[in-house]
Image 1 (tube, rainbow, N blue to C red):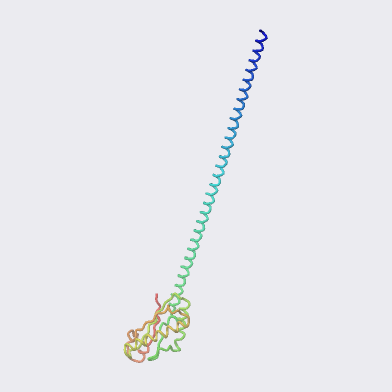
Image 2 (cartoon, one colour):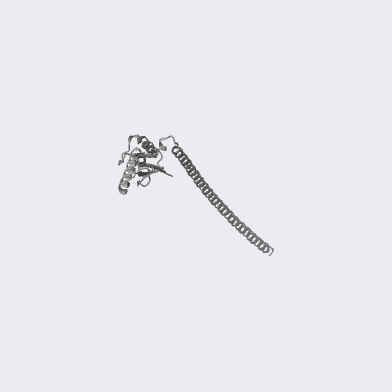
Length: 222
């Protein structure tokens, strides 16, 4: 009887031991599963953080690159504006200097440019040889300064009808214009008009007065 009790107790102890060992192993396995899950979760979190950081760095670089391009565009725009202003200022200075030169040359009383009238023989529109140097001086001046404009006013003495004198004055002005163009002036620099006998500079009817009225006047237009 005693032997049976001892055997039963041993079996019970063995069963309890096996149960405890099984439970311990299960606990260990469960703990290992939790540890593995935590490890994977940590790794995933780390990967996400790295991806997010890389994306942030890429976005930051993109923003920096865009800012750099914008700065370069603005710098180029400012450079172009400065260049444009420099060119405009240089052109203005050049134009002012040109206008000053024009006024200076036209104001010299001892130059051929100061002589602004060409005189003709009676009933003629032919430019006399004595006035060729004057015509040449004005032609070269107009050629040198294409922005300058001039008006040629053809005039006659009192002899002849109004219609005839207007036609003769026109012919004188046109002939002088063509002479200036041949020297180098442009057609569009020169206007012509005929006053016939309506703008005399001498009121007498003697030959001297009439010779002064047979003329073409060169009038520079401001």
